[in-house]
Length: 236
Image 1 (tube, rainbow, N blue to C red):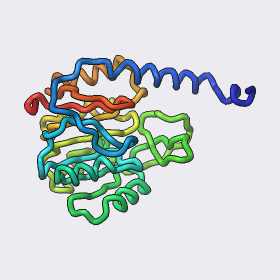
Image 2 (cartoon, rainbow, N blue to C red; image 1 turned 90 degrees about the vertical axis):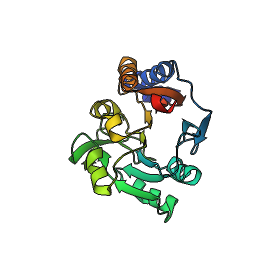
Image 3 (cartoon, rainbow, N blue to C red; image 1 turned 30 degrees about the vertical axis):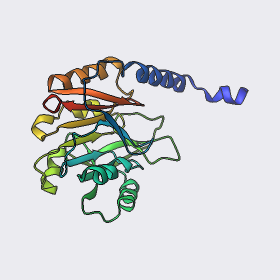
Image 4 (tube, rainbow, N blue to C red; image 1 turned 120 degrees about the horizontal axis):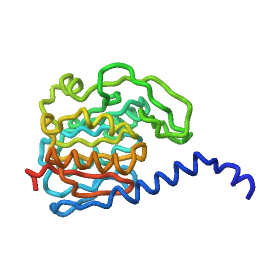
């Protein structure tokens, strides 16, 4: 028992308690009425979205591929969408290409979506089984690397995309800084999905949700852990 207790460092315990409080409190909100919800992707990499809103030919940017692009693939298979899968970790991009195969509706791009083009300092996870990185100090780690950063408009211009119909954002705590630089309406976004992390407080998360509401994006679903889907009010 003593060795196990020795591993429970105060900072680690505080971080775990903060995460649990965050994940319990943030989803407690009023959700807008939407068509029946459907789970897209695996238990780990999936998201809840309203069924029937996504149309064939939609341009979908899935930012934060991680090691699971099952959501990306289902967008193509179910809705015939065009999918851009984005991640700064080379290994995850290689895995995404392997999993998606040679489907012409799919492309994978190595970049950390950021507020400016150029190298970005990222924290490497403490989990030896993962390759995940964070721009916001999410992990219990002192290891950092530089990875390529791109703005969404810059990447869209390179790829020749005039709009993003569906945007999924899972960037390990960087969402708080990044989202306040986005104009989702100007990007053409109709459905928006984001995982909120406990690098922000419950108050910061709720403030961000309120800002999205003022921009016309209403929460319609939440999947653990705090993976919230928003639909523009014009769709509902």
